[in-house]
Image 1 (cartoon, helix red, strand yellow):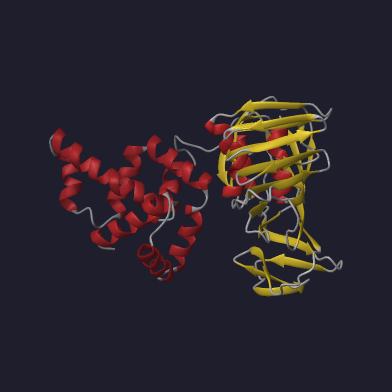
Image 2 (tube, rainbow, N blue to C red; image 1 turned 135 degrees about the vertical axis):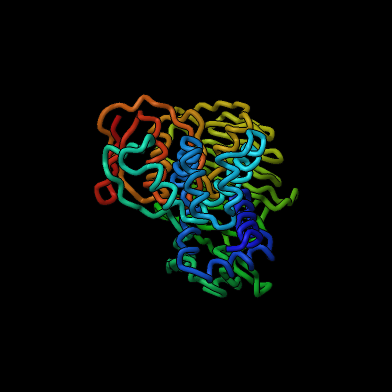
Length: 405
């Protein structure tokens, strides 16, 4: 590989890790992937945060050893560089080391991390990686899937294979594109029937309601709504968790009924409802606009950045959230898990829903956890990160997870 080609691929990798590729860069990336099975394998490793982190730990812990390995492996670093590294004066040596370290960080990725990791982690070396107390089996993350129940009681399974028109009911066409369900009236005499979208554990789906309101439905959740909105308000019913971007219509307020225990009334706003039965409260969090939350005789109006909690006894609490707390609420909608100082049961409730597993606790885990990772990762990767605290261990038996201190 020439130095210019090396630098080109290094730049693509850096851009991909830092946030994504442009259309032109993505074409070059796909071309590089097609050149070799090793390139495809590297692409998989780039999505493994545990492997990358361990590689960089090894790199920083054993710089001189890694540099020696780089000098052996890279023809671009010619004989003069090797001689300079050994015998030239300190300023020249420092220049070569800095240049070589630039190659080293990328080389770890381009060589699939195998050579460097073997060299620095082989038996007898200074750096070793402690293995988990219990071996972990890969459990795949959830996917886009749901069930749509029509007004006549028929059920349609939704997943990534759905395309185009899937049903027509009451003068309304129901279509799926890019994992999003949407409605369009095909007749002025459309009748009002009600549909329900339900996601299982390990599933999520997006929905555009008949009025244009966008809904993200999290795992183990449901939303019931009419195929067209009539009358003085737009009313839906929610269980589990859903994120809404409500289409503004001041003459027809949007109302979300929450498990019959509360109600959120809005005119046009972005907000999240978390109404899982196994959570300690029903939480409504506002990101934009204004909403009014009521439970019985209790009513609160909140501003962006605030949250209302309906407790099990029917009482209502209101609070302002920090930026990181807001990120924790909406991370799922953006495809991530994000926790700050969360107890293990809070973390595992989300793992249970997204990975479709059952949880069993053996002993008390007192550790608090910080986690920021994509929901597209496998469950064993999540567990490896959590186990780095030394405060928790996991054992996977089929789809049962044992959680231990």
